[in-house]
Image (cartoon, rainbow, N blue to C red):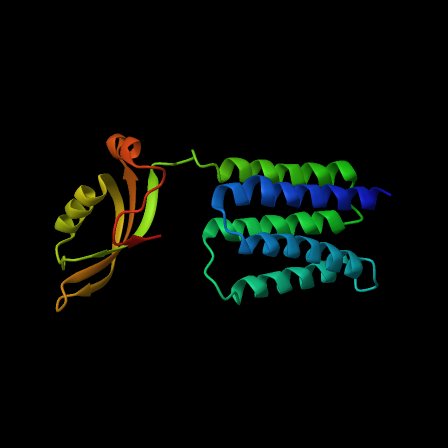
Amino acid sequence: MSQFVLFAIDICAVVLLVFGLYFPRHRRRDLVVSFLGVNIGVLAVAKALSSTDMGAGLGLGMALFGVLSIIRLRSTELDQHEVAYYFCALAMGILGALSTTSVWLGGGLMALILVVMFLGDHPRLFRRYRHQVLVLDSAFTNHVALVAHLEQLLHARVHAVTVQRLDLVNETTVVDVRYALTDRALTAEPGTATPAGARR
């Protein structure tokens, strides 16, 4: 009976993870079915394999290998926070399938995962900081001049910048920049606007 309670807790937890945290914050519809499928699929496979002579360790290992292969062979690019949601859905599915886990322990660990994701992925956490790849319409060979130009362009303090491509013929520079918005830029921007010529 306790196993069915864990199943119900897992379903409630993944629904809250997907529809309460992920989708309202990131609005990527195609990953909704991925997170739900990973969670329920791992829950079913891990439970089936852990109840056979193969043992729980082998069953969970195979489930982990399968999910990691799916993530690695994905056809579309995932951001790091989306990978984190994948692993949370995976972890909750495994917790729900463990027959050796008590209802209180399993439910508590799933609640801990939800709390960590709520806080760690909160929009107000480090909201000044940005990471973008910019294509500049000038060729910068001087690092100091490049940083000064970026700070003026972004109205921000640049913490790190890496030149990915420098084209002296077409006079373009592709840079990976990490920066923090100033107070003036933070209050002026409508939501989380992206500067022209930049992509996340």
